[in-house]
Amino acid sequence: MTERSVQKRIKSVIPIYGMGVVFFLYALILPMYRITDLIIALALSICCYIFLNKLFPGTVVEIEMPYQSGDKDVDQVLTTGREYIQQLENLKEMIQDTEVSSKITNLQNISKQIFDYISKNPTQVRKINTFMNFYYPTALKFLDHFAEHDNNKVKGENIQSSLNKTKESLSQFEEAFAHQLDNLYSDKALDIETDIVVLQNLMKQERL
Image 1 (cartoon, rainbow, N blue to C red):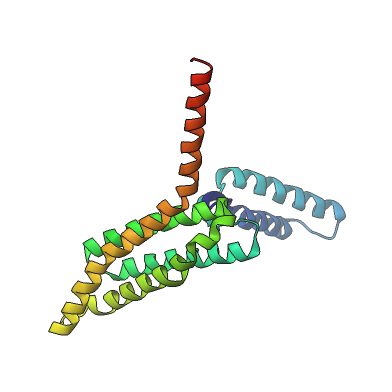
Image 2 (image 1 turned 180 degrees about the vertical axis):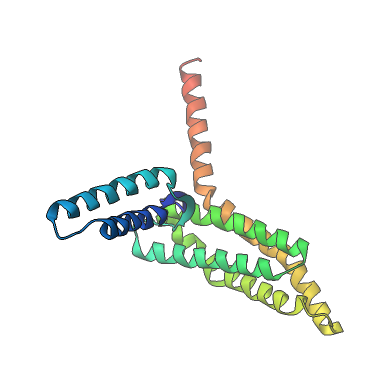
């Protein structure tokens, strides 16, 4: 099961308050020592709740569901990946450079495709060991450095040179991320090519 957004309705508190107000007003007007009065008060309160619940159904919000594969170790990798993506988002909000922000967005999009693939093909998780243990943490480290110094009003020569090199390195990270994604699909691509060859040979034998 892949990461996805699901809609969840959050109920309004107005019907509950309305129910309480009706019960309270009834108790002020009429005595509540008889069981029939209590039943009537509850009935009116429930009717009020149903009526207000239709008028104020609440709001619908989208909630991101985490990646799940069913394998504990794989799910841990996917959870870490989700945290990495969130760290990218946090860094993007800190960085004002539009070019760097655009590259971060691209890294996020590629990452989501990688983790989506792993969630569907958990046996392939070994293929992203280097990606998870080196490329991703290093990319986050570089971006954290960039975010820390980019907003400084005064930048010395060394800091500016370091920022420029960090900015240039992001293109290499984009290539590394894209290569990782492409590598995951290499087996499926080979299977498709094999199926095509088999299909072509079969059609030749059948003279189609």
